[in-house]
Image (tube, rainbow, N blue to C red; front, side):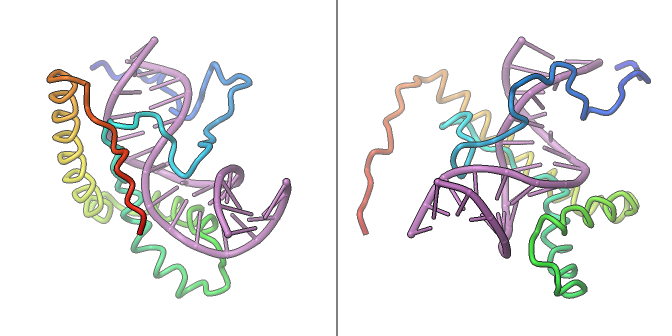
Length: 123
DNA sequence: CGATTGATTGTTAAA
DNA sequence: TTTAACAATCAATCG
């Protein structure tokens, strides 16, 4: 890997066209019904803890969106040692996710003729 | 009554 | 290498 300084921010879609940024029609973006989902990132784990503290310090805040902003700014101010805690958690999750992907590939190789989970039980 | 949006960064898969 | 988009969360809002 060569350190390309030209790598600006990853947040710069050159071909950002009429396509929407990201708008899932349903609760979850069904990009792949069978593929393993992406595990939450370290940032999200940090959010779980930060959320509680933030609500205590900011009981006036109603939504999580505001917390996200505050989290982002705080996240940047955090040191690696502080963030590494959450990175460690995410790392384990990624390991599990990687294994899930392997199994997914295995099944795919074995035969993508997996049966649909049409067994809907009505409570 | 329910689907959808909005904001954050990180991670991953595909081109 | 780089781009695109999804991962959680939850209140508020539109239909």
